[in-house]
Length: 542
Image (tube, rainbow, N blue to C red; front, side, top):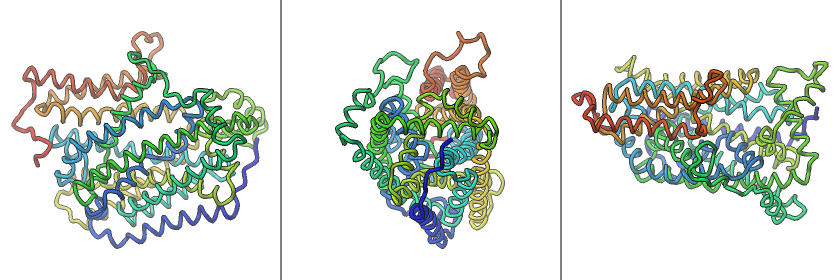
């Protein structure tokens, strides 16, 4: 068992000052939320660069902030192929999706699905999104708090509660304007923190940057991975590129939180600018974090005692997840056993926070930890505002109170913000006692439903005549394929049925599922099975 690392008074001052500044920003924008449109779309008057920084900060959650260095540390730069697909997805979003959202007059991204396919499609997409955000908030806060708790000896529940309260309060009082401005500031904190960490890391190596490059290159830490073109059973560069294209279409094309940034922009030109600022900023920044991971590999190769400490930290985290107390008589034995069973990939996400805690000077350490919190908070605040927007527009206003007033809409938005903040925080607290397998189940389910939403939108764009029963059939067939591809690669698949399992890498699910929906829909359209055209509406029709 290791001792908690020092977090000095200056570090606390930096971290607490950051929290206070973010809270103050929320209250500053309180008076600007006089209507539901102000709360959800900022009066549709924000500059594109600001919305773009918000998109970037939302994109770079605490998962990415810690996971990207971890991927390069354990493997290579294979994940960068995902980033290279972003400009293509952004171009598609700007060309086809953004004009639809800007001209719809709606704040909900999924109102378009109702126009094309019916109310069922809107409620499916919106309902899944709302459930997904509860889990996403919980996972983001939990994965941020877990290394902080072990590194510094903080109570993980206190870390989660403090983060949840701060984010919920400034999202509640400030609406989307406060969220977007906070995201922009957090983006700057994220970049400053990462650049500082890299500079200190490179200067801390005896041979400087040259040694980092030599060690990392010798161990293929700058490789993009397997370039085999026709192999779909593992994450080759082409598989990751295809996954990146479709997953980023989900982000830039159909994700409610991104759509709200487009609508909040002051003009179509500014909305397009927001897409490109967010997309083109993430590509080099993802390379920065991957380079940090390669540099960390070189550093820990020369400091094996530090890597052993990381191994112990990860073992402590796993025991904490399993509910094992440090007061148990056999804790030391369990710690050694757990540590000995760890694989390299178990350590990846923990090397960056360990380096921050162990090697950065006081004050700078506080800034970097604030950056980790910033990555989580920007994602959570966006989830809260977008979830509240859908509760108000797709359920309260659409299903229950179509004659409701604007004041009632604002009330629902604020109550929903608090509700989703509370449920997301509760989810994070629940994860403290749950195992990794529980997270795996959730990500499996989210992958199935997320691919379904992408498929629905692409089906509507590529097969414009399809409606009614044929559209539902195409969606259902694609959904079954997505479920099979996902479940057959888990422990839920029956023993002895291995020959019927999905032979492709799991990343191909979000590629194959939507493509199958489009193919089935196209066959229906070619044979004249397009559904009742009297009730069909194009995207642009109200």
